Length: 144
Image (cartoon, rainbow, N blue to C red; front, side, top):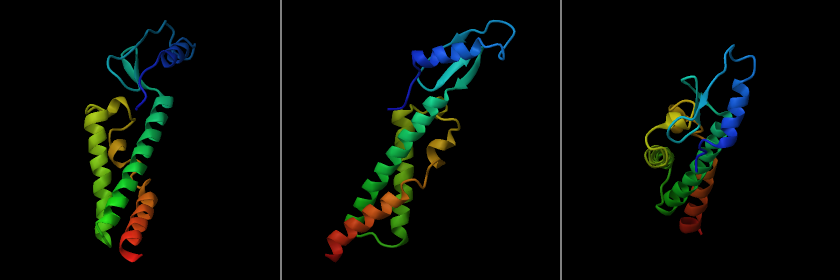
């Protein structure tokens, strides 16, 4: 679900590499072995902005859905007060570790600009979804 290297990205990078502003000599563009958002340009790894943007959108989507699920579960369990906020924080870290190990194979540098973006970037993006689903599930089961 995260965007990988593609031929179009390589073509765009090769066109940019041949532009006069890069070097006085021809520049060889090679594909980095493995998956991710990186290509190699004379040994230096370049991150493709379109892939990084796509990966951040996917991370936001996963964070929102995990917040909704955590909110419904917290509401069904009758969690109240600060323990609900703790449930949100735990759900976010659990989701981050699952993505880190299963989707990224333990190497977030291929997919994100900074590895900490996976854990701390957009951390609060699902908070409103969490609170909404938490209160609806709690009210439905315990108030009505």
